[in-house]
Length: 175
Image (cartoon, rainbow, N blue to C red):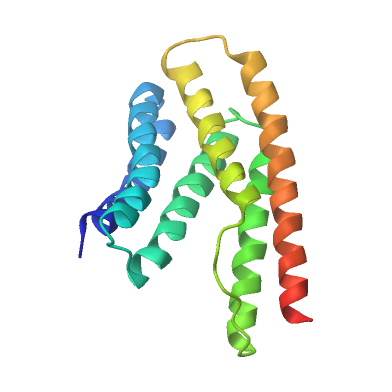
């Protein structure tokens, strides 16, 4: 076990607490914990590369932690009508389709290499920034309506573009 993997595991354990804070109306605390989790997302990878501490466990845990955090936040924010439900459905559906495709390739003994695409990294960044803006808006009582509206469209577009890019990669892999 190394520090990057511990940060990733910490992000996984933060998920239920962030969800509980949102459900309890504690948006400011949810904002700070979500922000800390988002920082560890970049920090764990940077530390693993800088100190040559990349592990197979980390390669699997990092995307699981990202998806657990973002999917949980988007579903929770949609349930409490703080983001459009259609956006949460798009985010969750994209991830389910990707996970399903990976499992399918394993089942038919043609595993696809798990490597994030650049559009996917941009999508994740946009999802993090948008969720952070929504939590900040509530937590700090800010009027970020325009930012949130633009952010929702941007996240939606990037989610669809990322889904399309993964679908194309899947089709090429299976051909």
